[in-house]
Image 1 (cartoon, rainbow, N blue to C red):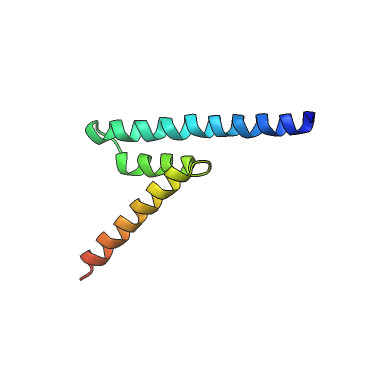
Image 2: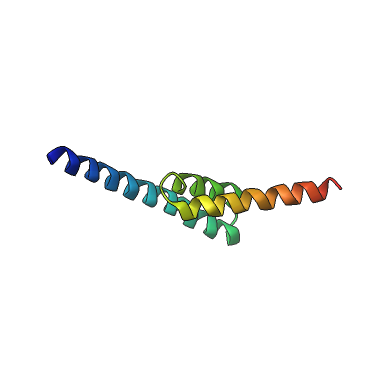
Length: 77
């Protein structure tokens, strides 16, 4: 029972740390859209970190990848 509680605590702590780091990078990237800086690099990095734990971030990241693919294919035509 103690081992199970320790595993739950580890999972929750990991989820919180990933959420804070990834969320901070995502917010920073959004701020960099209007401020000078590499927003189009920071936003995907934040989503990659968040996608380690959150399904919604995985789906956003997949949508971004699909959009980039479509743009690259249309640029080559």
